[in-house]
Length: 334
Ligand SMILES: Nc1ncnc2c1ncn2[C@@H]1O[C@H](COP(=O)(O)O)[C@@H](OP(=O)(O)O)[C@H]1O
Ligand SMILES: [Mg+2]
Ligand SMILES: [Mg+2]
Ligand SMILES: [Mg+2]
Image (cartoon, rainbow, N blue to C red):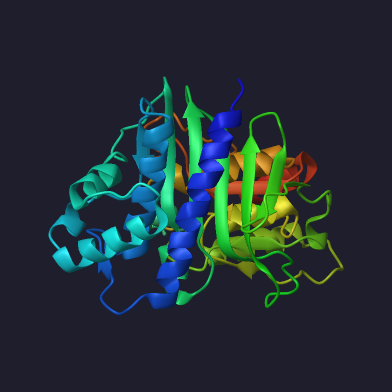
């Protein structure tokens, strides 16, 4: 399946949304974020980024439905905030929209997903908590066809090009289409470079990355899994990288980390498809393997959530995967 046009449009949409997020962060004032029903934060940038990506997808692919994280419900009842979002959106879009069109664009993300047909899934800002802190976040867009992720784009505006130089140049876009490998470019140049996961097979020679939020995944279990993996190793275990958002998948895809573990804390939370679709394809196309912590393939055809799966296990290469999976199995009694 040729997805050349889809890739070009998706990269452009993620770039425009990333620029919007960057401009918001410079000017974000107190009161420009809301708490959603589940108490998680959403900012003017989340709404704005969803409006611009959905508008660009509508323009180029009017028949494609979208599974997006946000909806306009809370924005509609807050005139000051919706005015601010409209200003941001029209600041980056060539064709300007009205408030009503902006609400409609945001709400085009209300598709239910499913096993058949083609649809996009969008997380306008993944890691909103990281975004608010000035840390890592990602604009995440993927195309799913008959339950399979065919195209993934991650915009990581704050991700250092070189992780060992955190104060150096930042901002990467990672892209993959299924079967064609994974690539990255900077936010400012369209030169794409191929990326690949680590070739290291010994867990002691690589690093684990995990989320920052302790309620999203268990740091303690990760500690036990790593201790199990390193029990016969003389090497010092390198420090874990804690980071918000799908930037963790970017780290595995680029070989900065060998392992990403997301062991659930809550037995009722269902992972969302927009939190994993792009990252999973990019890691696999870079040479890695991504499943849930029970070793099952991620099922992107079961609706808006990964309800058939539990947690995430992503590694570079299959030898490393087998070792980490065996450790997970002996530590995690499901
Ligand atoms: N109880 C929970 N368990 C796992 N993930 C959760 C969670 N509550 C929220 N999340 C998801 O965790 C994502 C951030 O991931 P991470 O912790 O790796 O940075 C959030 O994305 P948003 O920031 O887009 O809302 C949200 O969808
Ligand atoms: Mg959110
Ligand atoms: Mg998210
Ligand atoms: Mg989000």
